[in-house]
Length: 349
Image (cartoon, rainbow, N blue to C red; front, side, top):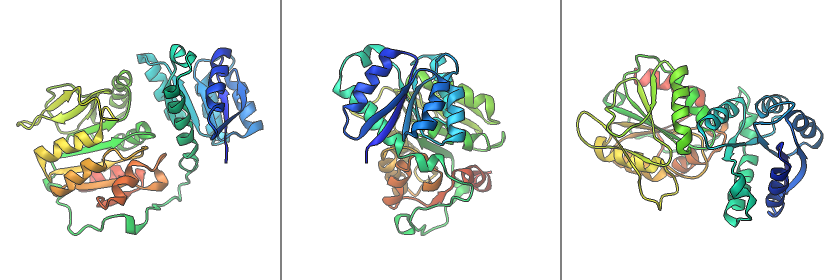
């Protein structure tokens, strides 16, 4: 079945170019366009597309205001376009909080050239966003739908008192998932936390600052040489890899990493590093996201006796990363997103 797309942007050139790129993919069809936020609401109501692509800077009604209305009234998933600047990052985070599923950088120079790579990234992302409708419309009665056969049955009671570090990874849907978890942790949380979120380098500083403002624990973008402290979460810088350096007191290493890796930062890399340095004294948590980043690293952690939690399908925006670790039989516990922070408080604090 063809995925119907509504393109919203105040630039006529951008609307035309996006329409050409999207319609060139047999999976997709642009069924309408809009030049401002109010038109977006009107056209979305009339056409009922499967996905909306939207800019945030528009006349009459801006993209964020329009997004909130569409999310509240129609539940249609939205892919936002964002500039790769500090201010663009802040607005993008506002858009994600308002209900956008994901975002892409808006680059007129790149989009003006007919690039197969650009088209593939754009169209694949639209297809992925279209599959998130169930995540956007989940009800409070939603429960874990992961099959019991896909999840490892623990053969032991995890020794949470021996845990020295928590590592949380996420991709699509991750910013709001991390916000949900971290804002419910108390200021006296007794362990340090490493955060790996798939995000451009220009975005991670703004995201860490946002989390630090709204959380009781401290949150910062990780820097090379940071000493791990209790009640402090360290966000891996976008475009780089975050590891431990293996010495005491525990310190963070931030490196460029292998260019062949798909993800920078990569949860597999961070999981592998902490498995080497802390063995089983780690709690790894895999949240919403596309792909399988974290599965190989979780396997290394489990081999050392560490504990792995995964977000359940019903509360994920995209059930990819958690499904990968669950199907590999590496998960000790599957949790609704809203249960992650309470469980951390029960077991760790």
